[in-house]
Length: 176
Figure 1 (cartoon, rainbow, N blue to C red):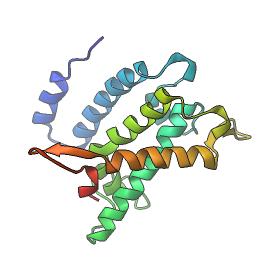
Figure 2 (cartoon, rainbow, N blue to C red; figure 1 turned 60 degrees about the vertical axis):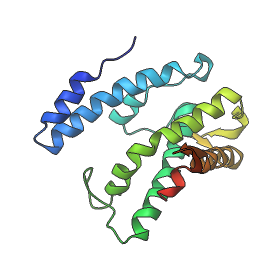
Figure 3 (cartoon, rainbow, N blue to C red; figure 1 turned 90 degrees about the vertical axis):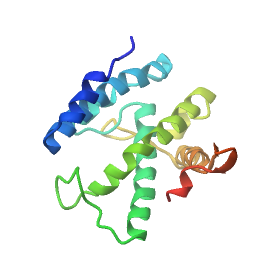
Figure 4 (cartoon, one colour; figure 1 turned 45 degrees about the vertical axis):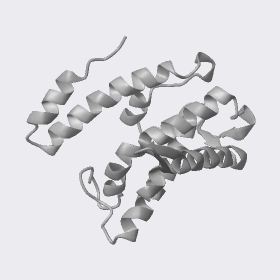
């Protein structure tokens, strides 16, 4: 099933508050993760990310563990960029002063790079069960071997050359 997002786009054009923006963002996220899950082979037992946002729990499956780690890498890149120009680290998603809200907002347009890196690792069979460890709380964590694989794939995504006006230029690293 393909999702029609025209209703959400219309809502975004008419929003009057940050709360409305965040509500529409949540609706679109649900649709995105439903489609994303279709790209993950069933044997990976990928649990929806939407359920994870509603519960304060650690990751229980390999794909979510990899996504969590990848997003933390992206967050650190965004924080580095924010700090390099002297900005504060909070904005739209500010919930508490201890959160890096501006970094969360800044990473939104680049999350797809993490998603692509993780899908690439899943499709290539690069990640193995020996790259993970189950904690006493039944959460799944990366071992150093798995973390290195994700760092390498994410770095490859950041450093890919893209075509722009008939030239090959560094991609996302232009922003960082």
